[in-house]
Length: 393
Ligand SMILES: NC(=O)c1ccc[n+]([C@@H]2O[C@H](COP(=O)([O-])OP(=O)(O)OC[C@H]3O[C@@H](n4cnc5c(N)ncnc54)[C@H](O)[C@@H]3O)[C@@H](O)[C@H]2O)c1
Image (tube, rainbow, N blue to C red; front, side):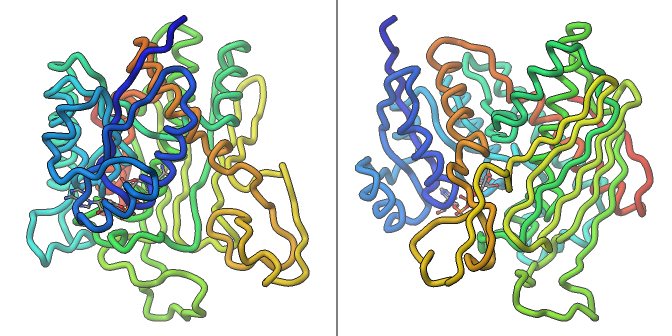
């Protein structure tokens, strides 16, 4: 079969842009032609463009007019606007997590911790609706860049659930590390919240995805979230917190610990932890307890490789594993972290959807359910952990 040519653009040239570029370069199902990158800071955009041999654009509309698919790699507060601009042109937006959210009233002094959470939740629901409406009116689709869906461990679990017709009774999982690299993170107005939305969406989306898979396999219909109980905490802001210098501790108005407990439509459960207080590299995992099997899905660390390094300096120019505090001693070294996280598989799948109309696993409904669950979670946390219904859009 002759490969189709797909024209792509990138919006944003930061951390996520780097791993998206690496994944685009590995797409094999179609021929990708990169029209260029657009960013807020022309100097940074030009430097990123030069390092990847692509064009830098200073005109967002101009770039969108040139492409079939656009990677939305900017802070979450901008996802809705840019995704809708793309959808209005029938361009597929690959939207990084979180799909969207609720980012305050636009005032400089907005404090996400103090803000009443029902209006915050309603604003998030409105944003989701705006995106779903734009998608419904477009020939393109939202491609929700939740890499956990495409991680090998989660896709293997999909196969187990589909082939054994498993009933999942409880999942529990976590995404945690010692603090985000991004300066914007820690301000509700840019990220729409703290650990729950910043990190929790990964295991949460994976859990919601596997329950969808179960419903699809057993009776042809997704099993979706019904209610949520959540708690949030700000551990690094406690008066008594003793800062030993190993954890980031300058969060402005967001939580650094969250626990989210979901009850699905069929009464089964998922419990997710997300935090910024876990040392020793990222801790990304999901355990599935079903009626016929139990699986431990490890995204990071994995046991694929372990190294012992007696002298820190020896590994100065060797990447070991994400967010590791020291390279000395034993480490669960990641030989191919991007693969274990599902980044390449995700981008390959999205380009197949754009080129050949293949069905998308990480779609807008999964994204919408995730964000709706998160903001019902923030309302629950405000109420001290009371159960709150999840609105399905
Ligand atoms: N899937 C993952 O594991 C993962 C990891 C990191 C980040 N992300 C997501 O990727 C997105 C981007 O995060 P990041 O870590 O790359 O952030 P970043 O701060 O490193 O980069 C953000 C980029 O957006 C650009 N930008 C900001 N405002 C803009 C505007 N108004 N117009 C155009 N460009 C603008 C900045 O110049 C920068 O290039 C976020 O949604 C984040 O949650 C996902």
